[in-house]
Structure formats: structure tokens, C-alpha cells
Amino acid sequence: MKNDQGANILSDITGLVRFTVRVVRSMMDPPFENREMMKQSYFIGYKTLPLIAVTAFILGLVLTLQSRPVLVDFGAESLLPGMISVSIVREIGPVVTALICAGKIGSGIGAELGSMKVTEQIDAMEVSGTNPMKYLVSTRVLATTLMLPILVFFADAIAFVGSYLAVNLHGEIAPQLFLTNAFAPLHFYDLIPATIKTFIFGFAIGVIGSYKGYTAGFGTEAVGRAANSAVVVASVAIFIIDMLVVELQHSMEMLNF
Amino acid sequence: MTITMKMTVGKGIRLGVFIILGIAIFAYAIYIIGKQRNLFGNTFTVSGIFRDVSGLKVGSNVRYSGINVGSVSNVHLLNDTLVKVQVTLEDKVHQFIREDSRMEIGTEGVMGNKVVNITPGTSTKPVVEEGATLGTIEAVKMDEILDELKKSSVNTTVVTQNLAEITSKINQGEGIFGKLFTDTSFTNNLDQISRNTANLTRNVSTITSKINHEEGVVGKLLSDTTLAKEFDQAGNNLLESTRNLKGFTQKINRGEGMFGKMFTDTAFTRNLDETARNLTYTTKQARAISENLARITRHIESGKGVMNKLLVDSTFADSLDGTLKNINKTARELDQAAETVRKNWFIRTFSTKKQPPEQQQIDTTKNRPK
Image (tube, rainbow over all chains, first blue to last red; front, side):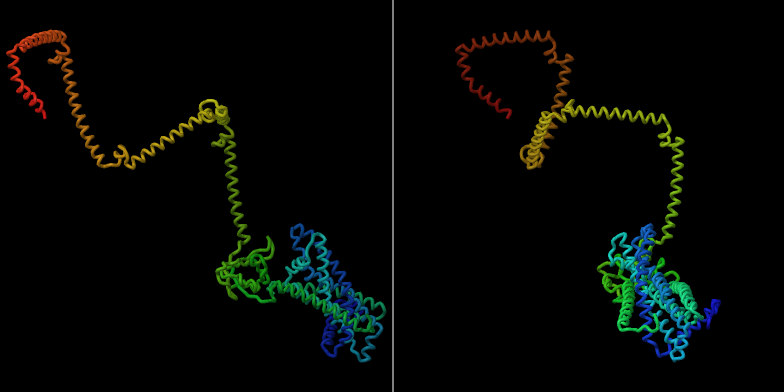
């Protein structure tokens, strides 16, 4: 289980899978640590919202401004809201939100659990009869899994606001018309897979952060390494999951899902 | 984010608001998309059968008179050539979809999504029932258009080739147009013609200007008011004459006057006919007489007969004259003798007794012709 600095990727993956199985199993078993879960949700969800809001607003604005010249060249400026909405809902909203959460939450979990591991607080918890897997890890993983989709909904909505402002920089458009245009090309097969994807992203961030912290080595520098590798691995995992989900989604669209 | 941080009530409320808001955003998105795809509210379905749906997908918009009224709910193959397209429409347009409404696959813009257009039907036809199959109009496919374009481009090539041949012939001076463009004598003739035409038009122009300046008969005719007045008078007279004539003919028609009788009274015409026949007879007789006369005069002229002697022979005339003189003389002497005799008393008494039978004789001669 315990990996040293030079541990190779394959054993890391094996350890992650085994850790994930343990987390899921502990999540299923009662009793549940509801209060701790609420606390984690508060930090992971509510406390991350300002960061997500600023990022999403700027993203929507910039994406619109950057896409506009191409559409103007094609004489399809009226399709701008629709194009932006599809981009945000399908891909950019979930992925960017997940990446920011990987940076903020993943690193936080990794560092927190890592420092607890280094200072042997986890061992002490085990001795005192509390299941650290249940109390520390499951609550955090559940919190990220449930909070990330809600953060993505906010991110999408705020990105729409940014996009609306950007469209209005070049010409007047009523919010109602913008919304109609934005939702016109959206289907359930845009929204539902994207939402399912965000649950997976949240779960991945929580599991990877926890795993990296839980398996931190010895010494103070191990805490930093745990936090760092939690962000890196979570980010890479997000892209890989995204790719797999999009492939799945496309193959389902082919079958007229 | 330490393990010792306490979860207060305020934080719980904020977390709750955060979660509820997030879910509300999601629910709104679901509602908006669902509204566009008619997942909520009353709907009804109709279907159409196409040979080619040009990439129509489930969820594609359905339009009635250009308004989105529903979406495609199912596209599936019926057999090897036919595709059945089922569409779900809002209940509020149900009343407008008639049995003779048609389904047609169109495109949003030039390269946009495929849409199903439903055309309005006749208002007298009944409204379609749930699940009815509408008639369809096959769309013109892009490759068919390209095929037509190919044909027309081939035609264009032929036409331009022909044009090239024609122009080269013209350049070489073949045909009328070639003459027109290359033959100098031909063009000279044309030039001459056009010059003549110019002269002609100039003359015409001079004439017309003269007419305008009241020169010549035509000028007078066109511009002199006196003449015009005369013409007017003449016209009036003519008008009056015709009016009279009209009255006259009317009278004739009514059978008034001799002419009227002539044209209308059949008895009169019969008489007239008879008269004419008599006239003919008379003239025939007159002709015979005149012929005889002519013969006589010819005889006379040729010196035959007494008459001729009478008229022509001067010797005879002289002698006749002498004779007549003699007769005259004799008669006078006889007259004198008779006078002498009458004066004799004996004879006078005798003659008065003889007078009444003389008068009777005269009377009988008078009555004889009757």
C-alpha cells in the first residue's frame, strides 16, 4: 500500500483501485458520518463557489469574444449563443470546474490527510475506535461527488451571464432571445451525460486526493508531495474520464439515444 | 479545513441554499430543454412515410407555418425503401393539422439542421386523428441538384462551342452576318441605303414642316380654318341631305308618295308592270314605224316614187306649181262662174229647195266614225 517516491505508476494505479474499492465499501456500510459530510460539503461546495463563479464568468465572456470573429466570417453571428451554450454545457463547464476543484479541493484533501498521516493522527483515530476510512475519506469523497455537479450548474449559469454580456458588447440582444438562442441547440443528450460526467469527476477528485493523502510517506515534505501529486493525478484523471465519457456519449448518439 | 472546524447552523443554511440553487438551475435547464422537445404538456403524434429523410434525427424540430410546434420522436425503416418518421406535436396545433396536410423535410438555412415542415391543409377537411399518417412531399436532394447542374453545364459547353463556331464564321465573312461585318461593298450598300433613308426622312420632315406652316393644299387642309369651316359646312349640308334622304326613304318605307307606292303597293307595281309591258309593245311598234319611215325616206332620197318627185324633182315641182296655179286660176274662174250662176234667180230658188238633204248628208258623214 505504502508507496515511496520512486514507486512506479502501475503499482500506484493498483493501489488507487484497491483504495477506491475500500472507500465505496465503507460508504455503503452504516453508520454514516452525516455531520462530517455536511461540513465537508460546506467547504467543498459553498466555499469554492466564488472561485468557480469568477472563473466561469470570465470563461463565458472570453469564449464568446474569441468565437465571434469566426462566426461573423460565416455570417452566422446569430448562432453565437447556441454555439457557446453547447460548448459550455457539454465540455467546458464540467471540465474547467473539475480542474479548478482538482486544484483547490484535491490539493486540500491531499495536504490535510497527508499531514494527518504524517503526524500519525489517522493511526490515533484507528486506536480510538473511529474508522478513519469512514470518517475522513468517505465523507470527503461523497462531498466532492455531490458538490461538483452543483458547482458545474452554477458555473454553466454564470458562464451564460458572461457570454450574454460579451454578445451585448457588439450588439443589443434581449436576455430572453439570448436564452432562447442558447437553449435552441441543447438537447437532453447534451445535458444529461455532461451531468453524469461531473459526478464521476467529483468522485475522482475526492478519491485521488484522499488516496494521495492517506498514503503519504514520512516527513514534512511528504505532505507537499501528496498535495502536489493529488492535483496532477486528479487533473490527468479528469481528462481521461472526459475522453471516455465523450466517446461513450458519441457512440450512444449514433444509436439514436 | 481542519478537522476541528465546527459546523454551525448558519453554515448549514448557506450549504442548503447553495445546493437548492444549484439543483434549481439544473431543473430550469431540464424544463427549458424539455419544453422545446415537448416532454411536458399534452401532445399528439402523427407520422409520415418518406423515401429519404436526408439525415433527420430524433429530436429534430417540426414546424408548422415556420413555427416550432414539436419534434421528431421516432425515425425507423419500414422496409428497404421507406422510412417512417413519427413526430410529436403540441396539442394546441392539433386543430390546424388537416387530413390533407403534408409533411416535408426541409433545412434550417442552407446548411442547418434538418426539420420537418407540415403544410396547412384545406380548412374544410377534418382534423387528423391521433397517430394518423400524413401524406409527404419528397425533398429535392442536393445530389439531384448537382446532377441537373452537371447537365446544364454540358449544355452550356455545347452552346458556347456553337457560338465560337458562329463567331469564327462571321470573322471569315461567311453568311449574312459575316457580310455585315467583313464585306465592304455590302456595308457600302448599307451605307447608301441609310443615306437615302436619311434624305427621305429629311424630305418628309420638310414637307411636314411646310404643312405645319400652312403651305400647300395639305397644309391648308390641316391648318386653314376657313377651309375647315367650309368643310364643316359641306359636312353639315351632307348631313342635312342624308337626313332628308333618310326622311324620304322613311316615307318610301311607309308607302307614302309615288315612290312609296312603287316600293310598297303591290297592285301599283302590277299595273306598272303592265304599263311597262305596253310601253315595250309601243316602242316595238314605234321602231317598226320608224324603220318603215327610214325605208321611205331612203326611197325618197334615191328618187323613186311620187313623193321623191314631189320633194326632189325641181322640174316636176315647177310644173306642179304651174299646174297648181292653173288649177287655182281655173278654180277661181269656176268660182266666179258659180257666183254668177247663183245670182240667177232661177237657180237661187232651186238651190234653197235642195238644201235640207245636203245637211243630212253632212250629219251622216260626221257620225260614221263612231
